[in-house]
Image 1 (cartoon, one colour):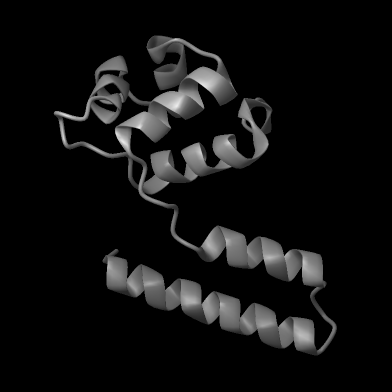
Image 2 (cartoon, helix red, strand yellow):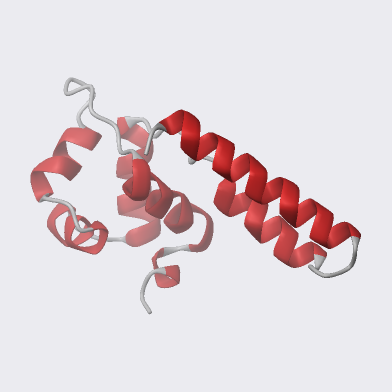
Length: 108
């Protein structure tokens, strides 16, 4: 699916949720959750990735990589300014969750 199509689908989902909330079918809390899930994750700098791993998750690169279902090499590249690699997609969304709610939010 293209990014443009995904953006359109997300926008339509939020629009529908706003209408459901307006008609009191969907709570304000659920509307906020839908908006949060529909918004794209931020771009993560190497320093920010390392800070999340060290301060929020308190994990080594290899353990953190396993938690995110990526290779240790991938985490190393994300944390290296010289690599130019940044987490995207599901990995960026997981980092966003860890940053906001801690690693415990993923430990289900």
